View (cartoon, rainbow, N blue to C red):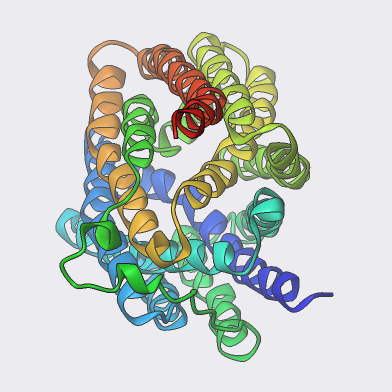
Length: 408
């Protein structure tokens, strides 16, 4: 196994054990907040959105620090460490303010690690296989997210009669993160980035600092899509609303992640061959169909089918979009680009989750999903226009250069 591929594998293992912790935690959290602490849906939406948005500021901070210092592992370590502390502590509080604080700390941890980890993957691969590299990392991450719900199911079953069932499960989320921190320190190799062209070394040179215009256009389209992409906590609540039992929810989450994991590498590789844009458009269409289905769902079996189909959206979008960012941005700017990208996506989650909470409580439980489906289709239309414009530029540029040469 090549050194770079080995590094991507170990980065993926970080995500594997991180995913186990995350997906023991994610399905149980909204149930704990709603069923044990008695918090309403609007508070859950605000807490998820506000925490993610506030913590997203650390994504851009860590991204800028990565570009400045070149080191990525210290930020990844601190990020996982904060999550390891914050998640178990939720078991020892019932105050809404304390819940917000601990969710914020967990979000800060995610913010600190995400951009450096994305940059580490991008810098450990080349352009020809970048989609596959992100697919490998996402696949290992998602297999962790298959194991996590299955472990959660076992814990729920074993602790079904225990008065502190939820609290003990929250404490258990810390243990996989201990493995993650150990792997990070012993197996993952740091990567630098190529030095800048000497012509771009001047401190006042705007070319050194500027990110491509197309990156910001792509980001704007992603933000539009994000307005309809509320927290997955609402999918869990919708599953319970339609009739799934608490024991079944981890299993349906495992099914979703199994589909996600099984197709991430093939779809990432597909994006290397046919282009990121085509694969992402497929993913947004899958999202629109899935959310429309969640809106119309009436029976429990439909939830199982929809969660499986929803896995296609994740596999065609998350890793592929980050590979697309790497394609547009040079290595020396990627920490900042991923910081801006992850921050912006996180910030838009606040209005998205608040809108979803309001639509759920003031219209009906189907309304957030109809809204999300419609927004996704509109964003897909804008992305199609962006793609066609970029393709036209690539076609016309050689012709223009040829004309210029003839005039000379």
